[in-house]
Length: 70
Image (tube, rainbow, N blue to C red; front, side):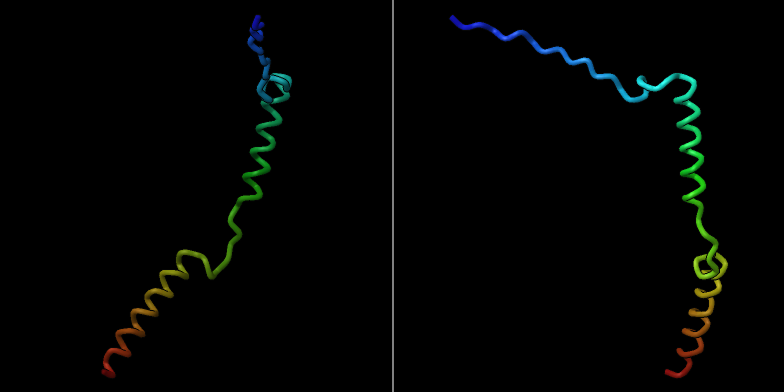
């Protein structure tokens, strides 16, 4: 005679429910602010938009100047 197994029931709680309500929101907010501070783009003159535009204009002027020698 076959005995049927009882269905297993899992009680899984998400991580956000394990933390205290007030502390969890403040903790998430502080972590988000820390991430925003570390992701700020460092100012570099070579990657600035103005430098890229000037570089493109210089290439176009050089290309026009050198095309006169053909």
